[in-house]
Length: 465
Image 1 (cartoon, rainbow, N blue to C red):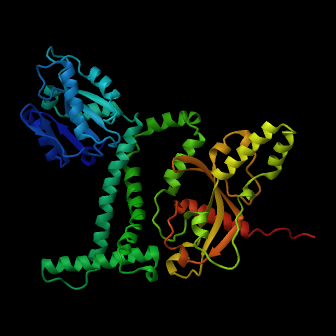
Image 2: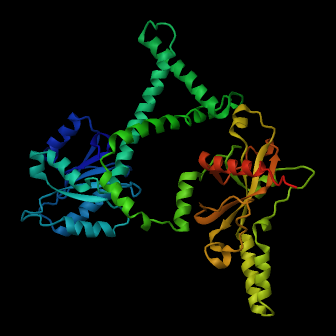
């Protein structure tokens, strides 16, 4: 764990007891928050903090001569005020004197009570430290942390990734500043002139960043320029992040070997795959704007389109009608079974969500050269009608016209994304600009869908006689 890029909190009711630690953190340029609470003085944050990764916690906050129950209760109260329930993974470095007669073992009962408390995030580790000895030899902190992780705890790689990310973000800002410095023409005669020139050069670059995303013809005086200008920075960030990851994390070979050996035990369920796909491949809260990758409810699109020929998309083209008819015949004259099957199919039909995904090429969007938006029709197929063999057979699979079943989550339910290549349409742009999409395919998924669509459209067919 790289302390210089870690969000650290120190909690102790006697500042003089941790003076050496605070001086060391200051000397190394490591940012921290110091809080304390005792009978006379309270200094805690106005609202709980997020993203704390290392918490130095004195286990006796003004409760030296009090009962164990009071000591634990005080600790939990302070933690609740400092740590937001959505804080994420963190490590507690516990200042204890649990070998002394005064305090006994506080760590064990603390763990029991903390685990039962749903208002406080659970730490990934509690490192027990003797305050007196540690303040005399602060290198013990680093040794304890190394012993706790030692390339064997997967959270080490996540905490390091976050630290690398902070460094990479700072490097992106510096890179932009360096580029803007090169854009200053002439020699400024004063610091104020220099600052003004640097701002103008940076503004010029931000405009160009935005134009690379939306195209110059699509930019206007609204704040969309500064929104679009931030998107290309992600690519620069990834470059810097990759450099830091490759340089600073080769020591995790031990953990990599362990993960590789257990790979066969790590298969995902459909629900887990849906969670991962939604996290990596989809944006769950896209803005209302026409953009390649947007996924709309079919009804939201069609009610805004007015033209002579009625556009018809059919959910039943995703059904395997032969299988369904076969099931009906097998019911014979059993009225109860026929009714049960009909109810099941009615629920099945109502649960499917017809959707349209926009696959207009990105270049058309940026160059503002599109005359209409290109869509493919599909459905969100409820996983409850696909998880078992009885219902799996209702989906038409393996016919080339359907995009592969991709599990995803929508409104906390698991669906499969199915697209049908026979249903592609060019729809007018203007009525669609303000429609709110329900999801957005990120560039990797969008490129996959566009490639599938283009491959299907360009297949040669039969040429022999």
